Amino acid sequence: MAVKRREDASDFSDLVTTRSGSLFRTAYLVVGDHQIAQDLLQEALVKAYVAWPRLRDVAKAEAYVRRTVVTTAISWRRRRSFHERPADVLPDPGVADQTDRLATQDAVWDVLRSLPPRQRAALVLRYYEDLSEVQTAELMGCSVGTVKSQVSAGLAKLRERVGPDLDEPRHGDQAVAR
Amino acid sequence: MNTLRETLARRADEAEIPAVDVDELVATGERRVRRRRAAAVLGSTVVAVVATVVLALVFTSLTGTERSSDPVNRPKQGQSEPAREVVRKIVYADGTEGRTVHYGARKVDTGHTFVWMDVTDDGFVYLLDDGFSQATREQRSSVWFSDGGGVERIGSDACPTITRADPKTVDKVVTDRSGSLVAWFDCTSRVPSLDVYDTRDDPIGGRPRRLAREAETSCAHRPDFLENTCFLKGIVGDHIYWERQVWAETLKRVVLMRYDVATGRTASVTQRDYAADLVNQPRALVLGRSRLDGTPTDGIGVNFTSAGRRLVPLRQLPDGGDSVPTKAFAGSTGDRVQLRLPAGYRTEDPITLFEWLDDDTVALGAGVNAWGGDGKPDADILRCTVSTGRCVLAVPGVRDVRIVPHLLLPG
Image (cartoon, rainbow over all chains, first blue to last red; front, side):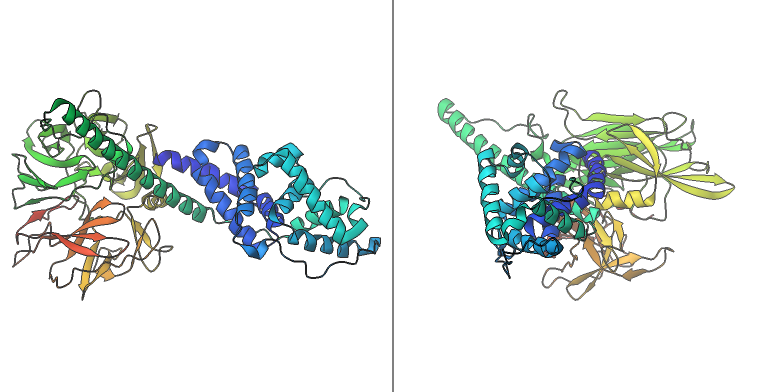
Protein backbone atom coordinates (compact mmCIF):
# COMPACT_ATOMS: atom_id res chain seq x y z
CA MET A 1 0.00 0.00 0.00
CA ALA A 2 1.22 3.44 -0.90
CA VAL A 3 0.99 4.78 2.65
CA LYS A 4 3.00 1.91 4.01
CA ARG A 5 5.67 2.45 1.40
CA ARG A 6 5.97 6.07 2.42
CA GLU A 7 6.41 5.17 6.10
CA ASP A 8 8.96 2.61 5.03
CA ALA A 9 10.77 5.25 3.02
CA SER A 10 11.01 7.44 6.12
CA ASP A 11 12.48 4.63 8.25
CA PHE A 12 14.74 3.66 5.38
CA SER A 13 15.94 7.25 5.13
CA ASP A 14 16.85 7.14 8.83
CA LEU A 15 18.91 4.01 8.26
CA VAL A 16 20.76 5.54 5.33
CA THR A 17 21.41 8.78 7.17
CA THR A 18 22.70 7.26 10.37
CA ARG A 19 24.43 4.08 9.28
CA SER A 20 25.65 4.47 5.71
CA GLY A 21 29.08 5.68 6.87
CA SER A 22 29.74 2.59 8.93
CA LEU A 23 28.31 0.34 6.23
CA PHE A 24 30.46 2.00 3.58
CA ARG A 25 33.63 1.40 5.62
CA THR A 26 32.80 -2.29 5.82
CA ALA A 27 32.11 -2.40 2.09
CA TYR A 28 35.36 -0.58 1.36
CA LEU A 29 37.45 -2.95 3.47
CA VAL A 30 35.80 -6.00 1.94
CA VAL A 31 36.37 -4.94 -1.68
CA GLY A 32 39.37 -2.61 -1.28
CA ASP A 33 38.15 -0.19 -3.92
CA HIS A 34 36.34 3.08 -3.26
CA GLN A 35 34.18 3.11 -6.39
CA ILE A 36 33.18 -0.53 -6.17
CA ALA A 37 32.41 -0.07 -2.48
CA GLN A 38 29.99 2.73 -3.40
CA ASP A 39 28.29 0.48 -5.94
CA LEU A 40 28.18 -2.32 -3.42
CA LEU A 41 26.63 -0.18 -0.70
CA GLN A 42 24.06 1.24 -3.10
CA GLU A 43 23.10 -2.24 -4.25
CA ALA A 44 22.82 -3.48 -0.67
CA LEU A 45 20.70 -0.49 0.37
CA VAL A 46 18.34 -0.92 -2.57
CA LYS A 47 17.95 -4.59 -1.67
CA ALA A 48 17.19 -3.53 1.89
CA TYR A 49 14.53 -1.08 0.68
CA VAL A 50 12.83 -3.79 -1.36
CA ALA A 51 12.96 -6.17 1.61
CA TRP A 52 11.91 -3.52 4.15
CA PRO A 53 8.45 -4.95 4.92
CA ARG A 54 10.27 -8.00 6.33
CA LEU A 55 12.89 -5.97 8.21
CA ARG A 56 10.72 -3.49 10.11
CA ASP A 57 13.37 -1.89 12.32
CA VAL A 58 16.62 -0.10 11.69
CA ALA A 59 18.81 -2.45 13.78
CA LYS A 60 17.57 -5.47 11.91
CA ALA A 61 17.93 -3.62 8.62
CA GLU A 62 21.52 -2.66 9.34
CA ALA A 63 22.42 -6.29 9.94
CA TYR A 64 20.65 -7.17 6.72
CA VAL A 65 22.56 -4.53 4.76
CA ARG A 66 25.89 -5.60 6.25
CA ARG A 67 25.17 -9.20 5.35
CA THR A 68 24.13 -8.16 1.85
CA VAL A 69 27.33 -6.16 1.45
CA VAL A 70 29.40 -9.21 2.31
CA THR A 71 27.47 -11.80 0.33
CA THR A 72 27.11 -9.51 -2.70
CA ALA A 73 30.84 -8.73 -2.64
CA ILE A 74 31.59 -12.43 -2.63
CA SER A 75 29.10 -13.12 -5.42
CA TRP A 76 30.36 -10.36 -7.73
CA ARG A 77 32.82 -12.78 -9.21
CA ARG A 78 32.71 -11.18 -12.60
CA ARG A 79 34.14 -7.96 -11.20
CA ARG A 80 37.71 -9.09 -11.44
CA SER A 81 38.91 -5.61 -10.68
CA PHE A 82 38.77 -6.29 -6.97
CA HIS A 83 39.09 -10.03 -6.87
CA GLU A 84 42.43 -11.63 -6.17
CA ARG A 85 44.31 -8.52 -7.11
CA PRO A 86 48.05 -9.22 -7.25
CA ALA A 87 50.08 -7.14 -4.83
CA ASP A 88 52.19 -4.64 -6.71
CA VAL A 89 55.22 -4.81 -4.46
CA LEU A 90 55.78 -7.52 -1.90
CA PRO A 91 57.10 -6.14 1.39
CA ASP A 92 60.48 -7.02 2.78
CA PRO A 93 59.70 -9.67 5.43
CA GLY A 94 62.88 -9.10 7.37
CA VAL A 95 62.14 -5.65 8.77
CA ALA A 96 60.19 -5.15 11.98
CA ASP A 97 61.09 -1.59 12.87
CA GLN A 98 58.42 0.24 14.87
CA THR A 99 59.09 3.38 12.86
CA ASP A 100 58.03 1.53 9.75
CA ARG A 101 54.60 0.85 11.15
CA LEU A 102 52.80 2.76 8.45
CA ALA A 103 54.84 1.12 5.75
CA THR A 104 53.98 -2.26 7.21
CA GLN A 105 50.32 -1.39 7.32
CA ASP A 106 50.48 -0.41 3.66
CA ALA A 107 52.05 -3.76 2.92
CA VAL A 108 49.34 -5.56 4.87
CA TRP A 109 46.72 -3.63 2.95
CA ASP A 110 48.26 -4.58 -0.38
CA VAL A 111 48.30 -8.23 0.57
CA LEU A 112 44.75 -8.03 1.89
CA ARG A 113 43.56 -6.64 -1.43
CA SER A 114 45.16 -9.55 -3.22
CA LEU A 115 43.33 -12.17 -1.17
CA PRO A 116 40.28 -14.02 -2.55
CA PRO A 117 37.03 -12.30 -1.53
CA ARG A 118 35.93 -14.93 1.00
CA GLN A 119 39.22 -14.77 2.85
CA ARG A 120 39.23 -10.99 2.80
CA ALA A 121 35.62 -10.78 4.01
CA ALA A 122 36.31 -13.24 6.83
CA LEU A 123 39.34 -11.24 8.00
CA VAL A 124 37.47 -7.92 7.88
CA LEU A 125 34.56 -9.29 9.86
CA ARG A 126 36.77 -10.95 12.45
CA TYR A 127 39.45 -8.26 12.88
CA TYR A 128 37.66 -5.02 11.99
CA GLU A 129 34.06 -5.72 12.98
CA ASP A 130 35.31 -7.86 15.91
CA LEU A 131 32.65 -10.46 15.25
CA SER A 132 32.85 -13.95 16.66
CA GLU A 133 33.27 -16.91 14.34
CA VAL A 134 29.58 -17.71 14.73
CA GLN A 135 28.53 -14.15 13.89
CA THR A 136 30.93 -14.07 10.96
CA ALA A 137 29.52 -17.32 9.62
CA GLU A 138 26.01 -15.95 9.90
CA LEU A 139 26.94 -12.81 8.02
CA MET A 140 28.80 -14.66 5.29
CA GLY A 141 26.10 -17.27 4.95
CA CYS A 142 28.45 -20.19 5.55
CA SER A 143 29.44 -22.61 8.30
CA VAL A 144 31.71 -21.82 11.23
CA GLY A 145 34.17 -24.35 9.86
CA THR A 146 34.35 -22.40 6.60
CA VAL A 147 35.02 -19.19 8.51
CA LYS A 148 37.85 -20.86 10.41
CA SER A 149 39.43 -22.20 7.24
CA GLN A 150 39.04 -18.89 5.37
CA VAL A 151 40.56 -16.89 8.24
CA SER A 152 43.36 -19.39 8.62
CA ALA A 153 44.18 -19.33 4.92
CA GLY A 154 44.06 -15.53 4.80
CA LEU A 155 46.33 -15.13 7.82
CA ALA A 156 48.75 -17.66 6.42
CA LYS A 157 49.12 -15.64 3.24
CA LEU A 158 49.54 -12.44 5.22
CA ARG A 159 52.24 -13.99 7.40
CA GLU A 160 53.92 -15.45 4.37
CA ARG A 161 54.13 -12.08 2.68
CA VAL A 162 54.39 -9.63 5.58
CA GLY A 163 56.27 -11.78 8.06
CA PRO A 164 56.38 -11.41 11.86
CA ASP A 165 55.27 -7.76 11.69
CA LEU A 166 51.72 -9.02 11.43
CA ASP A 167 51.80 -10.42 14.95
CA GLU A 168 53.64 -7.57 16.69
CA PRO A 169 52.25 -6.28 20.01
CA ARG A 170 49.65 -3.61 19.86
CA HIS A 171 50.25 -0.23 21.38
CA GLY A 172 47.74 1.97 23.14
CA ASP A 173 44.01 1.46 23.26
CA GLN A 174 42.78 -1.99 22.40
CA ALA A 175 39.59 -0.66 20.94
CA VAL A 176 39.34 -0.65 17.20
CA ALA A 177 38.41 2.73 15.84
CA ARG A 178 35.30 2.96 13.71
CA MET B 1 46.94 -9.64 14.77
CA ASN B 2 47.25 -6.09 15.99
CA THR B 3 48.90 -4.87 12.83
CA LEU B 4 46.03 -6.32 10.84
CA ARG B 5 43.50 -4.63 13.14
CA GLU B 6 45.30 -1.31 12.94
CA THR B 7 45.62 -1.55 9.20
CA LEU B 8 41.91 -2.16 8.78
CA ALA B 9 40.97 0.59 11.24
CA ARG B 10 43.31 3.11 9.58
CA ARG B 11 42.08 2.32 6.10
CA ALA B 12 38.49 2.54 7.24
CA ASP B 13 39.11 5.91 8.88
CA GLU B 14 40.88 7.24 5.83
CA ALA B 15 38.14 6.16 3.44
CA GLU B 16 36.18 9.16 2.25
CA ILE B 17 32.53 8.51 3.01
CA PRO B 18 30.47 9.25 -0.09
CA ALA B 19 27.19 11.14 0.02
CA VAL B 20 24.29 8.76 -0.45
CA ASP B 21 21.23 10.02 -2.32
CA VAL B 22 18.28 8.59 -0.40
CA ASP B 23 15.75 9.73 -3.00
CA GLU B 24 17.63 7.92 -5.73
CA LEU B 25 17.81 4.77 -3.60
CA VAL B 26 14.08 4.93 -2.88
CA ALA B 27 13.27 5.52 -6.55
CA THR B 28 15.42 2.56 -7.59
CA GLY B 29 13.86 0.43 -4.87
CA GLU B 30 10.34 1.41 -5.94
CA ARG B 31 11.12 0.46 -9.54
CA ARG B 32 12.26 -2.97 -8.39
CA VAL B 33 9.16 -3.39 -6.24
CA ARG B 34 6.97 -2.55 -9.22
CA ARG B 35 8.84 -4.93 -11.49
CA ARG B 36 8.42 -7.71 -8.96
CA ARG B 37 4.73 -7.01 -8.58
CA ALA B 38 4.29 -7.01 -12.35
CA ALA B 39 6.14 -10.30 -12.60
CA ALA B 40 4.02 -11.73 -9.78
CA VAL B 41 0.82 -10.60 -11.48
CA LEU B 42 1.94 -12.11 -14.76
CA GLY B 43 2.91 -15.33 -13.04
CA SER B 44 -0.32 -15.65 -11.07
CA THR B 45 -2.36 -14.80 -14.14
CA VAL B 46 -0.63 -17.46 -16.20
CA VAL B 47 -1.11 -20.00 -13.43
CA ALA B 48 -4.77 -19.02 -13.03
CA VAL B 49 -5.41 -19.27 -16.77
CA VAL B 50 -3.72 -22.63 -17.05
CA ALA B 51 -5.56 -23.93 -13.99
CA THR B 52 -8.88 -22.66 -15.33
CA VAL B 53 -8.36 -24.24 -18.73
CA VAL B 54 -7.37 -27.56 -17.19
CA LEU B 55 -10.34 -27.55 -14.82
CA ALA B 56 -12.72 -26.62 -17.62
CA LEU B 57 -11.44 -29.42 -19.80
CA VAL B 58 -11.72 -31.91 -16.97
CA PHE B 59 -15.21 -30.70 -16.08
CA THR B 60 -16.38 -30.84 -19.70
CA SER B 61 -14.96 -34.28 -20.24
CA LEU B 62 -16.62 -35.57 -17.07
CA THR B 63 -20.06 -34.08 -17.58
CA GLY B 64 -20.26 -33.78 -21.34
CA THR B 65 -22.03 -30.46 -20.94
CA GLU B 66 -21.00 -26.88 -21.51
CA ARG B 67 -21.17 -24.19 -18.89
CA SER B 68 -23.54 -21.39 -19.61
CA SER B 69 -21.99 -17.95 -19.73
CA ASP B 70 -22.37 -15.89 -16.60
CA PRO B 71 -24.81 -13.04 -17.23
CA VAL B 72 -23.32 -10.96 -14.45
CA ASN B 73 -20.79 -8.51 -15.73
CA ARG B 74 -18.77 -8.23 -12.56
CA PRO B 75 -15.45 -10.06 -12.24
CA LYS B 76 -15.76 -13.50 -10.74
CA GLN B 77 -15.68 -13.78 -6.98
CA GLY B 78 -12.53 -15.19 -5.51
CA GLN B 79 -10.41 -13.63 -8.20
CA SER B 80 -6.96 -13.16 -6.80
CA GLU B 81 -6.08 -9.63 -5.67
CA PRO B 82 -3.04 -9.09 -7.92
CA ALA B 83 -5.00 -10.15 -11.01
CA ARG B 84 -7.10 -7.01 -10.54
CA GLU B 85 -4.22 -4.90 -11.78
CA VAL B 86 -5.59 -5.10 -15.27
CA VAL B 87 -5.35 -2.74 -18.18
CA ARG B 88 -8.03 -0.10 -17.96
CA LYS B 89 -10.49 0.05 -20.82
CA ILE B 90 -10.81 3.04 -23.11
CA VAL B 91 -14.02 4.82 -22.14
CA TYR B 92 -15.91 7.38 -24.21
CA ALA B 93 -19.38 8.54 -25.17
CA ASP B 94 -20.27 10.14 -28.49
CA GLY B 95 -22.62 13.04 -29.11
CA THR B 96 -23.85 15.75 -26.83
CA GLU B 97 -26.22 13.55 -24.91
CA GLY B 98 -23.70 11.10 -23.57
CA ARG B 99 -26.25 8.36 -23.05
CA THR B 100 -24.40 5.40 -24.45
CA VAL B 101 -20.97 4.83 -23.03
CA HIS B 102 -18.40 2.71 -24.83
CA TYR B 103 -16.59 0.75 -22.14
CA GLY B 104 -13.95 -1.27 -23.93
CA ALA B 105 -15.84 -3.56 -26.27
CA ARG B 106 -19.12 -3.04 -24.42
CA LYS B 107 -21.80 -0.42 -24.92
CA VAL B 108 -23.67 0.69 -21.84
CA ASP B 109 -26.98 2.45 -22.32
CA THR B 110 -27.14 4.55 -19.18
CA GLY B 111 -30.50 6.12 -19.95
CA HIS B 112 -29.07 9.38 -18.67
CA THR B 113 -27.82 12.56 -20.24
CA PHE B 114 -24.55 13.77 -18.85
CA VAL B 115 -21.52 15.69 -19.98
CA TRP B 116 -18.85 14.42 -17.63
CA MET B 117 -17.55 11.03 -16.57
CA ASP B 118 -14.57 9.45 -14.90
CA VAL B 119 -13.05 5.98 -14.74
CA THR B 120 -11.70 3.49 -12.21
CA ASP B 121 -10.13 0.05 -12.59
CA ASP B 122 -13.61 -1.44 -12.27
CA GLY B 123 -15.81 0.71 -14.48
CA PHE B 124 -16.83 4.29 -15.09
CA VAL B 125 -18.47 6.98 -13.01
CA TYR B 126 -20.65 9.79 -14.22
CA LEU B 127 -22.46 12.70 -12.69
CA LEU B 128 -26.14 13.29 -13.28
CA ASP B 129 -27.71 16.72 -12.98
CA ASP B 130 -30.78 16.27 -10.77
CA GLY B 131 -32.04 19.82 -11.13
CA PHE B 132 -32.42 22.79 -8.87
CA SER B 133 -33.58 22.28 -5.32
CA GLN B 134 -35.99 24.94 -4.09
CA ALA B 135 -35.35 23.86 -0.52
CA THR B 136 -31.63 24.34 -0.55
CA ARG B 137 -31.52 26.68 -3.55
CA GLU B 138 -28.74 24.56 -4.96
CA GLN B 139 -28.12 22.42 -7.97
CA ARG B 140 -28.28 18.77 -7.02
CA SER B 141 -26.16 16.09 -8.60
CA SER B 142 -26.06 12.34 -8.15
CA VAL B 143 -23.10 10.06 -8.73
CA TRP B 144 -23.52 6.89 -10.79
CA PHE B 145 -21.32 3.89 -11.45
CA SER B 146 -21.28 1.11 -14.03
CA ASP B 147 -19.00 -1.88 -14.31
CA GLY B 148 -19.96 -2.28 -17.96
CA GLY B 149 -23.26 -3.95 -17.14
CA GLY B 150 -26.03 -2.02 -15.43
CA VAL B 151 -25.79 1.34 -13.72
CA GLU B 152 -26.28 2.14 -10.06
CA ARG B 153 -26.40 5.31 -8.02
CA ILE B 154 -23.55 5.52 -5.53
CA GLY B 155 -24.02 9.10 -4.33
CA SER B 156 -27.07 11.26 -3.97
CA ASP B 157 -26.01 14.82 -3.40
CA ALA B 158 -22.57 15.74 -4.67
CA CYS B 159 -21.83 19.35 -3.85
CA PRO B 160 -22.34 21.95 -6.58
CA THR B 161 -19.69 22.49 -9.16
CA ILE B 162 -17.33 25.39 -8.92
CA THR B 163 -15.30 25.64 -12.07
CA ARG B 164 -11.69 26.38 -11.46
CA ALA B 165 -9.07 27.77 -13.78
CA ASP B 166 -7.93 24.22 -14.34
CA PRO B 167 -10.11 23.18 -17.26
CA LYS B 168 -9.54 19.48 -16.91
CA THR B 169 -11.26 19.11 -13.58
CA VAL B 170 -14.92 19.26 -12.85
CA ASP B 171 -14.16 19.50 -9.14
CA LYS B 172 -17.16 17.49 -8.13
CA VAL B 173 -15.86 13.96 -8.29
CA VAL B 174 -12.30 12.69 -8.58
CA THR B 175 -10.65 9.33 -9.23
CA ASP B 176 -7.04 8.20 -9.36
CA ARG B 177 -5.03 7.10 -12.41
CA SER B 178 -5.21 3.56 -11.09
CA GLY B 179 -7.22 1.83 -8.42
CA SER B 180 -10.85 1.89 -7.38
CA LEU B 181 -11.41 4.98 -5.28
CA VAL B 182 -13.91 7.72 -6.12
CA ALA B 183 -14.29 10.79 -3.94
CA TRP B 184 -16.68 13.72 -3.78
CA PHE B 185 -18.04 16.23 -1.30
CA ASP B 186 -21.49 15.25 -0.14
CA CYS B 187 -23.85 18.15 0.56
CA THR B 188 -26.59 16.21 2.30
CA SER B 189 -25.68 17.66 5.66
CA ARG B 190 -25.05 21.31 6.51
CA VAL B 191 -21.29 20.92 6.52
CA PRO B 192 -20.19 18.93 3.50
CA SER B 193 -18.53 15.62 4.17
CA LEU B 194 -15.94 13.92 2.06
CA ASP B 195 -17.28 10.65 0.69
CA VAL B 196 -14.83 8.06 -0.54
CA TYR B 197 -16.19 5.13 -2.46
CA ASP B 198 -14.50 1.88 -3.50
CA THR B 199 -15.80 0.51 -6.79
CA ARG B 200 -14.30 -2.92 -6.22
CA ASP B 201 -16.62 -5.82 -5.74
CA ASP B 202 -17.39 -6.70 -2.20
CA PRO B 203 -16.64 -10.41 -2.26
CA ILE B 204 -19.25 -11.06 0.43
CA GLY B 205 -22.10 -8.77 -0.45
CA GLY B 206 -21.47 -8.79 -4.16
CA ARG B 207 -21.82 -5.01 -4.29
CA PRO B 208 -19.38 -2.15 -4.15
CA ARG B 209 -18.73 -0.86 -0.68
CA ARG B 210 -18.15 2.56 0.77
CA LEU B 211 -14.77 2.90 2.32
CA ALA B 212 -14.97 6.04 4.38
CA ARG B 213 -17.00 9.09 5.13
CA GLU B 214 -15.12 12.04 6.51
CA ALA B 215 -17.41 14.56 8.20
CA GLU B 216 -14.81 17.12 9.20
CA THR B 217 -13.97 18.96 6.02
CA SER B 218 -14.48 22.51 7.36
CA CYS B 219 -15.74 23.37 3.92
CA ALA B 220 -18.57 25.75 3.08
CA HIS B 221 -21.87 24.27 2.01
CA ARG B 222 -22.45 26.50 -0.96
CA PRO B 223 -20.07 27.90 -3.50
CA ASP B 224 -21.34 31.45 -3.02
CA PHE B 225 -20.27 31.27 0.59
CA LEU B 226 -16.75 32.16 -0.29
CA GLU B 227 -15.37 31.46 3.13
CA ASN B 228 -13.77 28.02 3.28
CA THR B 229 -14.74 27.06 -0.23
CA CYS B 230 -13.23 23.70 -1.12
CA PHE B 231 -12.11 22.21 -4.41
CA LEU B 232 -11.26 18.58 -4.88
CA LYS B 233 -7.82 18.28 -6.38
CA GLY B 234 -7.36 14.57 -6.90
CA ILE B 235 -6.65 11.13 -5.53
CA VAL B 236 -3.17 9.72 -5.29
CA GLY B 237 -3.08 6.21 -3.89
CA ASP B 238 -4.83 6.35 -0.51
CA HIS B 239 -4.72 10.13 -0.37
CA ILE B 240 -7.60 12.44 -1.25
CA TYR B 241 -6.43 16.01 -1.85
CA TRP B 242 -8.50 19.16 -1.80
CA GLU B 243 -7.86 22.86 -1.56
CA ARG B 244 -9.62 25.02 1.00
CA GLN B 245 -9.77 28.70 0.24
CA VAL B 246 -9.75 30.95 3.28
CA TRP B 247 -11.48 34.27 2.63
CA ALA B 248 -11.86 37.46 4.59
CA GLU B 249 -13.38 39.82 2.04
CA THR B 250 -10.50 38.84 -0.19
CA LEU B 251 -8.76 35.51 -0.64
CA LYS B 252 -6.27 35.22 2.18
CA ARG B 253 -4.74 31.88 1.56
CA VAL B 254 -5.28 28.46 0.05
CA VAL B 255 -4.70 25.45 2.26
CA LEU B 256 -4.01 22.07 0.71
CA MET B 257 -5.69 19.30 2.70
CA ARG B 258 -5.11 15.56 2.55
CA TYR B 259 -7.35 12.79 3.81
CA ASP B 260 -5.67 9.43 4.27
CA VAL B 261 -8.12 6.61 3.59
CA ALA B 262 -5.91 4.06 5.32
CA THR B 263 -5.63 5.91 8.61
CA GLY B 264 -8.76 8.09 8.48
CA ARG B 265 -6.69 11.17 9.28
CA THR B 266 -6.97 14.60 7.68
CA ALA B 267 -4.06 17.01 7.66
CA SER B 268 -2.87 20.11 5.86
CA VAL B 269 0.08 19.41 3.58
CA THR B 270 2.30 21.32 1.19
CA GLN B 271 2.27 21.41 -2.58
CA ARG B 272 5.65 19.72 -2.35
CA ASP B 273 4.03 16.77 -0.53
CA TYR B 274 1.42 16.54 -3.26
CA ALA B 275 4.05 16.69 -6.01
CA ALA B 276 6.10 14.01 -4.30
CA ASP B 277 3.00 11.84 -4.01
CA LEU B 278 2.26 12.30 -7.70
CA VAL B 279 5.65 11.10 -8.92
CA ASN B 280 5.83 8.33 -6.35
CA GLN B 281 3.94 6.08 -8.70
CA PRO B 282 4.47 5.11 -12.33
CA ARG B 283 1.51 6.93 -13.86
CA ALA B 284 3.00 10.42 -13.79
CA LEU B 285 4.63 12.87 -16.15
CA VAL B 286 7.12 15.56 -15.24
CA LEU B 287 6.95 18.61 -17.51
CA GLY B 288 9.95 20.90 -17.90
CA ARG B 289 13.56 21.03 -18.95
CA SER B 290 14.50 18.01 -16.88
CA ARG B 291 12.91 15.52 -14.54
CA LEU B 292 14.66 17.10 -11.58
CA ASP B 293 13.47 20.68 -12.00
CA GLY B 294 10.24 19.98 -13.89
CA THR B 295 6.66 20.09 -12.67
CA PRO B 296 5.19 16.75 -11.58
CA THR B 297 1.72 16.06 -12.99
CA ASP B 298 -0.62 13.13 -13.14
CA GLY B 299 -0.47 13.52 -16.92
CA ILE B 300 -4.23 13.89 -17.26
CA GLY B 301 -5.11 16.91 -19.37
CA VAL B 302 -1.61 17.43 -20.74
CA ASN B 303 -1.93 18.82 -24.26
CA PHE B 304 0.32 18.01 -27.19
CA THR B 305 0.89 19.72 -30.50
CA SER B 306 2.15 17.86 -33.53
CA ALA B 307 5.41 18.69 -35.29
CA GLY B 308 5.47 16.28 -38.17
CA ARG B 309 4.90 12.94 -36.49
CA ARG B 310 6.31 14.14 -33.19
CA LEU B 311 3.93 14.99 -30.38
CA VAL B 312 5.36 17.95 -28.48
CA PRO B 313 3.98 18.36 -24.95
CA LEU B 314 2.69 21.78 -23.96
CA ARG B 315 2.95 23.41 -20.57
CA GLN B 316 0.57 26.13 -19.55
CA LEU B 317 2.32 29.17 -18.12
CA PRO B 318 1.61 29.83 -14.43
CA ASP B 319 -0.37 32.98 -15.18
CA GLY B 320 -2.88 30.90 -17.11
CA GLY B 321 -1.76 32.36 -20.40
CA ASP B 322 -0.49 30.61 -23.49
CA SER B 323 0.89 27.13 -23.52
CA VAL B 324 4.53 26.70 -24.46
CA PRO B 325 6.34 23.65 -25.85
CA THR B 326 8.23 21.70 -23.24
CA LYS B 327 9.63 18.26 -22.53
CA ALA B 328 7.93 15.41 -20.72
CA PHE B 329 9.61 12.74 -18.60
CA ALA B 330 8.15 9.52 -17.29
CA GLY B 331 7.67 9.81 -13.54
CA SER B 332 8.77 6.24 -12.91
CA THR B 333 11.94 5.96 -14.98
CA GLY B 334 12.84 9.59 -15.61
CA ASP B 335 13.15 8.73 -19.29
CA ARG B 336 12.08 11.36 -21.77
CA VAL B 337 8.64 10.72 -23.26
CA GLN B 338 8.69 11.15 -27.03
CA LEU B 339 5.36 10.13 -28.50
CA ARG B 340 4.92 9.82 -32.29
CA LEU B 341 1.73 9.94 -34.31
CA PRO B 342 0.87 6.85 -36.38
CA ALA B 343 2.39 6.92 -39.87
CA GLY B 344 0.26 9.00 -42.22
CA TYR B 345 -1.95 10.33 -39.44
CA ARG B 346 -2.84 14.02 -39.54
CA THR B 347 -5.05 16.17 -37.35
CA GLU B 348 -5.58 19.87 -36.79
CA ASP B 349 -7.15 19.32 -33.38
CA PRO B 350 -5.35 19.64 -30.05
CA ILE B 351 -4.34 16.27 -28.67
CA THR B 352 -4.92 15.63 -24.98
CA LEU B 353 -3.90 12.81 -22.67
CA PHE B 354 -7.02 11.70 -20.82
CA GLU B 355 -6.46 8.23 -19.40
CA TRP B 356 -3.72 5.92 -18.16
CA LEU B 357 -4.56 2.41 -19.34
CA ASP B 358 -1.64 0.83 -17.51
CA ASP B 359 1.74 1.96 -16.18
CA ASP B 360 3.15 2.31 -19.70
CA THR B 361 0.11 3.02 -21.85
CA VAL B 362 -1.95 6.17 -22.21
CA ALA B 363 -5.01 7.17 -24.22
CA LEU B 364 -4.97 10.49 -26.06
CA GLY B 365 -7.83 12.21 -27.81
CA ALA B 366 -7.66 14.52 -30.81
CA GLY B 367 -10.28 17.19 -30.30
CA VAL B 368 -12.14 15.23 -27.64
CA ASN B 369 -14.27 17.10 -25.12
CA ALA B 370 -14.40 20.07 -27.49
CA TRP B 371 -17.15 21.61 -29.53
CA GLY B 372 -14.79 22.17 -32.43
CA GLY B 373 -15.60 25.77 -33.29
CA ASP B 374 -16.49 26.19 -36.92
CA GLY B 375 -15.70 22.62 -37.82
CA LYS B 376 -16.37 19.34 -36.09
CA PRO B 377 -13.42 17.88 -34.20
CA ASP B 378 -11.87 14.62 -35.34
CA ALA B 379 -12.35 13.10 -31.90
CA ASP B 380 -9.99 10.23 -32.69
CA ILE B 381 -8.62 8.25 -29.76
CA LEU B 382 -4.97 7.20 -29.89
CA ARG B 383 -3.34 4.58 -27.70
CA CYS B 384 0.33 5.30 -27.02
CA THR B 385 3.13 3.39 -25.31
CA VAL B 386 5.08 5.77 -23.08
CA SER B 387 8.39 3.90 -23.13
CA THR B 388 8.59 3.44 -26.91
CA GLY B 389 6.59 6.50 -28.02
CA ARG B 390 4.57 4.40 -30.45
CA CYS B 391 0.94 5.42 -30.98
CA VAL B 392 -1.86 3.68 -32.84
CA LEU B 393 -5.33 4.87 -33.78
CA ALA B 394 -7.43 2.95 -31.26
CA VAL B 395 -10.91 4.41 -31.91
CA PRO B 396 -11.59 6.42 -35.08
CA GLY B 397 -13.45 9.64 -34.50
CA VAL B 398 -17.01 10.47 -35.38
CA ARG B 399 -16.36 14.11 -36.26
CA ASP B 400 -18.66 15.10 -33.45
CA VAL B 401 -18.40 15.79 -29.75
CA ARG B 402 -16.82 12.87 -27.94
CA ILE B 403 -16.79 12.79 -24.15
CA VAL B 404 -13.87 11.03 -22.50
CA PRO B 405 -13.00 10.59 -18.79
CA HIS B 406 -11.53 13.32 -16.65
CA LEU B 407 -11.96 16.15 -19.14
CA LEU B 408 -14.66 18.73 -18.72
CA LEU B 409 -16.72 19.62 -21.74
CA PRO B 410 -16.52 23.39 -22.01
CA GLY B 411 -19.71 25.34 -21.54
